[in-house]
Image (cartoon, rainbow, N blue to C red):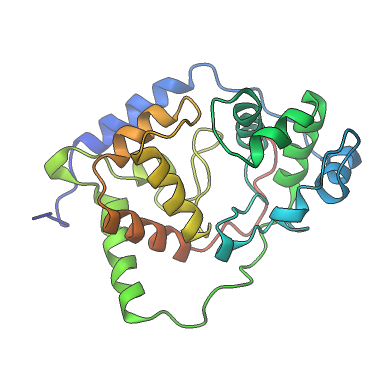
Length: 236
């Protein structure tokens, strides 16, 4: 039985170990976003590149019910890194891989800066009320996020994603207020050893500790958190 009142000492060690991976961080990308990034994001580009907004929305809000993540306000280095992973096949996606391969390196940088410059929009499909089952999931997810699973030495999610789920600089992504369907899908991919970016090595190890109900609970919890109101910008 888990002990929600005991915060394991390995949380600090886990965070410190992950921070050691930041010895060669990506250089910050300058703001503001250029019109070129907006054009690719909103209307598409030459070479048959469709617009990003077709899936992620004109405001970068994503489609939460469909599991399409929010991009607005994420850090530009993080967005750029994911596009590069899709492009080179280190992160698998039947939709994003061919799309990223059509973008030039310059277009990827501009799109990343554009979405990073956008304010985080309020959720458009959030339910006005939370049913009891959902509320129980949120409580369970919060315990997992804050305390981890001490019996199996799983660090708290907050050790890397921050206490409010807003990420830590360019090191970890902002997952607060993201789509529950998207978060659950990513955790399930890590648990099944799906190909991801290099940081996925750590996340795959984390996901092995999680049951299906744990994954649903974490997804419900992080989806319930308020997103960061101001845009993070490309320099964070």
